[in-house]
Structures are given as structure tokens and as C-alpha cells.
Image (cartoon, rainbow, N blue to C red; front, side):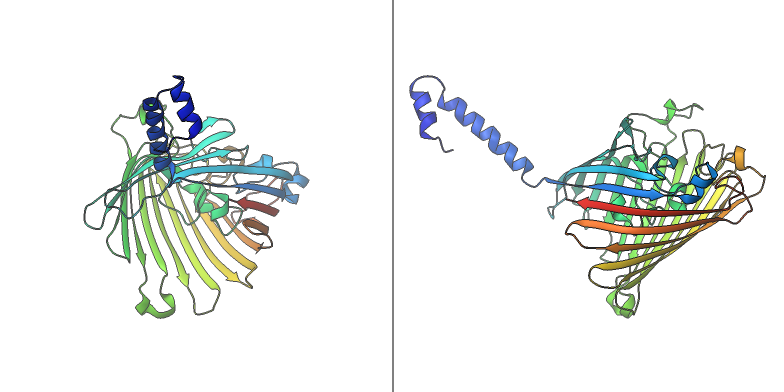
Length: 391
């Protein structure tokens, strides 16, 4: 340990001891070693949303963005995301962690709430056990393992979410195991509390008095196409299942199949996703209001890089389910199945470094004759300008 002349002078005068200085120095070096591989990252997402249909009707439509109806027809700070993490390295006994906080009014229950505008989106410890190719263990709060689209605003091809995103869990609090069978096959399995963020809570804390042993179980497998498949090389197929309580009052099964496909056209990729959910008991909110409620959603994606700076993303989306799945079953209830579709076009222009700037137009249409977008309106148009800075 190096000791400067000023410290030597203080030691000679009896003000400090070299032993205490050495101890403090060793402690500082230990701290620096522990945080040397820690990274700080995040993003700030802002948006301007105009929903002319719901404004004209005086009734909010059914917006498929996290801000909810309150975010329509105005400017929004969607979320400020801050992550502190240390990823796993190549070591056999590697260890790391991830802590991600969300700040803002438009988080809308996407993760366990600390306050009304602060949420813990991720908080987990990551460990590797030297079994075979290495078994990765994640314990704490983590994103759900199913779904084509994620919760983070900067991780999706579009600003708004597909119908399937709203049918599935968002986060889990529990344990997740992941294993790479090979470069082409990855599997994962886990156990958690009820489907959704339940910071500090168990299923016994919900109404309905579920047994303490009632947990959420999940598993998934991911396949990657080998180079021998030509232009399809690198394409992926993902299958996942989650079974557990939904809101603490029902046993719910979620199924998901998704695929991202390379194409022979340079700059063009395609994707498809299918979500299915079945409630084995009563549930509330988006996704069924009666026992035996079910819902399914199918989405197709096309992404094309026009130039190095301009990209176009298109999504066609369809959903069907028990009455009350999409919208409020009491207001829109007609004792028939809900059925809707949407078309979304998003143009992303990379004018600034580290910035996502995009314009989006989304058209939702009611296929079941229900005027869920206000008065007698079966159509809803949303125009969105979204700017995200990533660091």
C-alpha cells in the first residue's frame, strides 16, 4: 500500500496510525475490486400521444401502452429506468446481480411498487454452478420468461404493446434456472409467487386464502437454427408455459410460442407470436371476468432496415377471448366473445447517437360489433411520437 507524505507526517505527529491507514486502504481496495465490473445503464423515455377518436367521444379508448388512458392526448415522461448490474463472466463459479428501478407515472403496475411512481422492475442475484455446461441460477425479481415483446420501452420494435403482452405476466418473484444444452438449444425452468410482481408478498396474502404451497411454475425452451439452414441461420423458435395464480384468486395457465425468422431479403426480418391463457377460476381485470375465462392473441411482425438510419416496423395483431377480456365486461358486456384486431406502423430514425426517435400510427378495430372506443365507435386511431435516450 502506498502512503503519501502528508499521511506520513500525520503518523509522525501521532494524529493517525499507519496500521489504521493500512486497514482503511485494504478496505477501499476490496470495495473497488467488488464494484470494478459493475455497470450503470438505463434510459429515459418520453412521448407525445394523440388519440383523436377517444377525445371526440369524450371517453378514453382501450390504449395498449403502459400509460393508460391518462397518457392520451398529451406529453408524457413514460419512465426513467436505472440499472446497476454485474453480469456473469465465464468463470465456473461466476456471480453477479441486477437491480433495475423505474421512476415515473406511466409504469402502471408493470413491476412491484415501492411508491406510486417508483417500482422495482428487477432485483436478483445471479449465480453459476459448474454442472455440465454451467447451470445459471437467478433468484429475486425478474422479467417473465414468455412473450414476444418486453416491458422495457427501448426493447420493442413498436411503442405500443401487442394484445398478447397484456394477457401474460410481467414479472415474477422467485427462482429461475437456465442451462445451455448447446449453442442451438437453451432451456429454463423456475418457481415463483403468483403471476405478477408481488414484492414481499406470498399467495397467502391475497384474498381467497390460497395455500402457502400454491406457487407459479414455469418452463421454456429456445431453439436456434444452425448455419446449415442457409438464409434461415440464426432464426429462433421459443416455447414457454407458466401455470399459477392470477391475482391470487385463480389458477391460470399461460402458453406462448414465438419465432423470429431471417429472410433472404437483406435488412428484412419477420416474426410471429401466439399467446393463450386459460383461467381455471374467477379472475378480474384484463383477461376474463368469469370462471373458465380464456383469451388468445396472434401477432405477426415485419422489420425492414431501409437505410443505416431509417427502419420500419409493422405489426398486425388479433385477439379473442371471453366477454370482458378486452375492455370492461360490465360496460361492454354483450355475453359474446370479445374479438379485436390492430395494425401498427412504426418508423424509427436514428439521427442522434444513443437515441431512439420514432413515429407510430396504430389502428384498433372491434370485430365483435362492440363500441369499446366510445359511444358508437368501433375504431380507435393513435398517433405517437416517442423519444428515448439510452445510456
